[in-house]
Image (cartoon, rainbow, N blue to C red; front, side, top):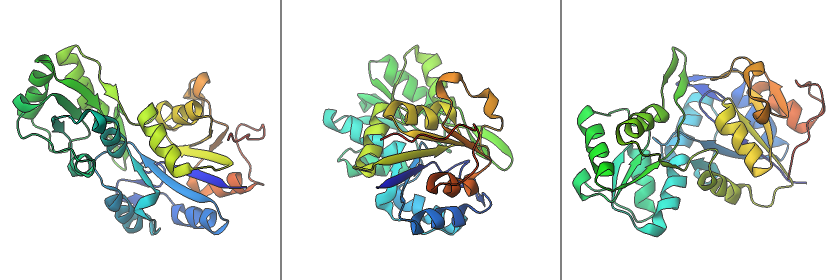
Length: 270
């Protein structure tokens, strides 16, 4: 029986540069037991190569870029068939992902037929205004994700969704969203999961990680080290099979014999 664990990054394995305690040991235990690992993130700022580099630097675990799915990759794959001329509010991870699909971002919004919005640490008001003007002139509006925040040791920083919301409010247009839990990201993760018998999704955000698990027919494990500190706040339709304090307890659940909350036995889905 093949088991895959699809693991989120921010809030699950680390908080910015700070690793979650025993994250490396948990991943190594799963890998040693023959569990395949996939790392799926809505953070569109990084390439897969950067993800594995950060994972090693922050957590001490060595992964392969082929194990990584990002919202930037899902977005690039989604828009590629239309061969767009995109204006990008985003970081290098998004630009590189688009380029790998044969798509070059345009230099000015006036040249764009599509506006793609991701997390942009260098966002300026001028670039935000240009994106709004382009959409107002008829450009399509695509977002890598709508996570309103992302967790850090200081607290919650503004996430992609905060930027997407600003563009949406200014234009009155709702974007097509590509990251978790939407179909483009599920399709990307499915390709990495392959024909696994059992798939667990480990995450800290119900509306993305647990919603993706639910939509794909996989089992969800909620950890309480990121944006969610109280499992009772999770909406009934997104409740996971298992709640654990952190990634450290995940191997016991996945490999069997671990205590879990809720008390009913977890039932991972194909």
